[in-house]
Each structure stands twice: as C-alpha cells, then as structure tokens.
Length: 331
Image 1 (cartoon, rainbow, N blue to C red):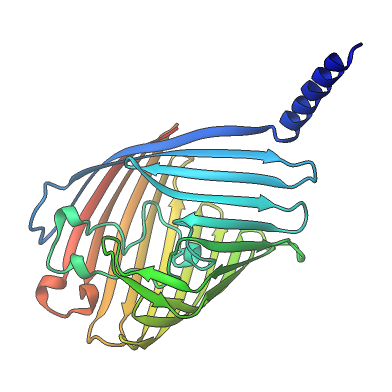
Image 2 (cartoon, rainbow, N blue to C red):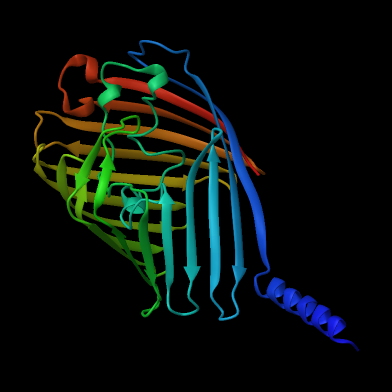
C-alpha cells in the first residue's frame, strides 16, 4: 500500500472516530394553545389570545463520560430560553443560562399544587388591562437573569438535592423594553435545597443573596412543603424579601393549594395566596378555583379568580373577579 493510500485511510478512520466520539441526539418538541380570559373591570381587548413555542434539545456523551446538552426555545416566533449544560459523571451538573434561566430560587417561588395556574397569575395580561391588574404582584422569588451559572450538587444524601447559582457583577436592564443600563455592583448568589426522601413529601428552602433589579438590593428567603396522599396533593409556600436602596421595604408572601385527582384525566384545585407590602397600606389577596382535563396531548383548563387590593391598593377598582380558559396542545 502506497503512502497516499495510508494517509487517506488514516484520515478516514480519524474522522469516523471523531464523529463517533461526538455523536449525539436531537429532539424537537413544542406546544400551542388558544385562551380566553376576562375580568370585572376590563377596559380593552376582546380577551382572546394564543401562544406557541418550539423547543430544540441536543445532547451527546464525551469520551470522558460527561454529557453535554444544549437547549433552545422559540416562543411566539422569538428566540427565548437557551442554555448549555455539562453533566459531569458523578460530580454534578454545571449549566450556563444564556437567556431566561433564572436562579436556583426561581423555580420554587410558588410550588403549591394547582389544576391550572397560580392564583396570582391567571388573569391580567396587557391585552385586557385594568386599573388594578396592571400593577398586580405575584410570588416573591429570585430575579431571573441572563448569562448566569447554575451548579447542581451530586446527591450525597438520598433524596436531598442542592442547587447553587451565581450571577456575575456587571450591568442589568431596567424593564423588558428599556435600553437603560444600570450597574450591578456585586454578583449575586442563590441556593436551594429540596428533600424528597419520604414518599409523597417534598420540602425545600431557598435563599437569594444580593439579588438586584437595577435600583434596589434584595435578600430573599423561600420555604415550602408539598405532600401527596391518595388522590389529594396539598402544599404551602412562604417567603420574605428584605429590600434596601431606592425602594426600601420588606414584603411577605404566603400561598396554599390543594388538588384532587378525580381520574387519570381530570383534576380540580383550589389556591389562595397573599402578598403583604412593606411600603403600601393594603395586602393583595388572591383566590382561584381551577379544573383541567387531559386527553392525549390536549389539555383543557379553566379557572375563576378573585383578587382584592391588587398591587397593594385599597381602592374599589382594585378588587377584581375574572376567569381564564385555555385549550393547549403538546407535541
């Protein structure tokens, strides 16, 4: 065999080995839905809405046993959430959240069970703005941020999960549509614990240290518990946020929820929550009765919502009743 053939076969073998080493898989998923919502003091909009998203997930195993995963979501035609993670074969998982990843606390701001959605987040879109709902507040949690790091600690105690996130110092944007940049003087750290070692029970605790939204610093704590027994699931969440800076004040949030699974396809639920504001006279109170029915990839959901003192205001216009109906498809 001449040298040219040897070189050619060697290059071919090398390319096959490289391809094998980085071979992976790609999956595509998504959802689409149509919704109708309304409230007692709606001022504009016909209440109808739609949404859709496409997700792309690619993963592959390296020669050293680590697994690299990349995820991207197109939400309503716009590139939205995306991240890259490395599962380090017994040494935990490191994730870089390029966009929309949030912090270790973000996923546990309100863990109460529900048949549809959180009691504070079912009505009040900009398409049906009301005098009160435009200023409504939800659960207290960590501030979502881009270009942050998340580390999931390997399980050292059975049933105990630990996550730590870090957002480097730099700049932040004030508001989704604003181009104003404000200095983030310090990096922020968030960590969360979750224990699932007892059948049916989940308990957790999370802290966000030095969260920053452009004008104020925040120290936030969240604790929660959820227990499933038979067809019932009950849960409770409580959180507190201490603010310092331009908008100083301490807020508190509590929520409870209970769901009953009537059948494999049908679930009903009741949720209530309260947001107490350190710098306002009223406490926002939310109640919701919800139901959901699933048939294959289709889910039909509906809820009736009552919200008092929206945004901490005690005027009559800030007491709102509303409803939300959604037909969603997952694929």
